Amino acid sequence: MATEIVILQPNYTVAPGDTLAAIARRHGTSIEALASINKLENRNSLSVGQRLILP
Image 1 (cartoon, rainbow, N blue to C red):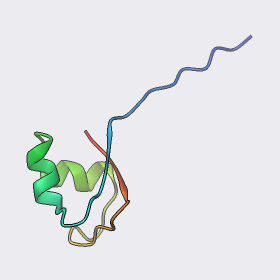
Image 2 (cartoon, one colour; image 1 turned 60 degrees about the horizontal axis):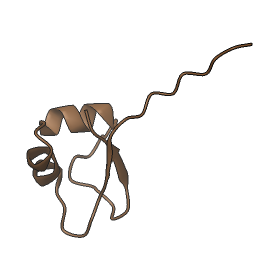
Image 3 (cartoon, helix red, strand yellow; image 1 turned 30 degrees about the horizontal axis):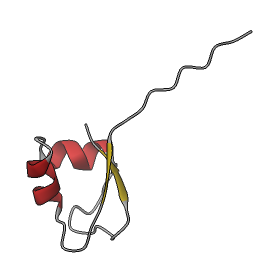
């Protein structure tokens, strides 16, 4: 019988007025790290309700 391993990633839901820079600062990470882990091509295009994985 196989055992399933689940790894939980902390995440953040984008709120109105959020920017990638503000989210990065608030969570002690960099814009580059957030963009990379979330595969964001356009760092200026966030949508309210979008879920971002936090590094």
